[in-house]
Length: 168
Image 1 (cartoon, rainbow, N blue to C red):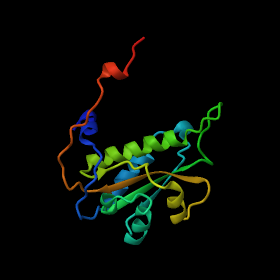
Image 2: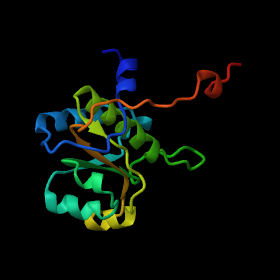
Image 3: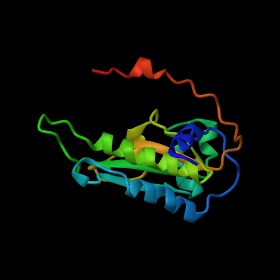
């Protein structure tokens, strides 16, 4: 499949099969993140893979949606602000670098027949405390991972190129 076909195949999955994800596939998704570019190649990320039901249940309290609790795996994507590149005006590129890595993971997952959903609307402070993370790490996103229960790719409404591109 071409890269553009893969981008069309990837969608936010909110219903997962009750089927474990093979460790080899999880490692491939993580490898995609590891290979992502970052500002000055600082790679200011750390990923926590949750597949233990007890810790997943605790983290699910930070985003209390029933479908989220059913994901077989959750990858917690953290940014390390102590090592991220900062532009001369002070702009910290940690979030940008994490976004690139997470996007690589979502596309790798889709390529492997897995589904993901990028979660940012969670209680980050509680999640940080539950996972007992050091101060330099910020939980940026939660990425549930599993086999989609419904493989019907929804019609993704997208703006036309004319609406989003200016040529000069």
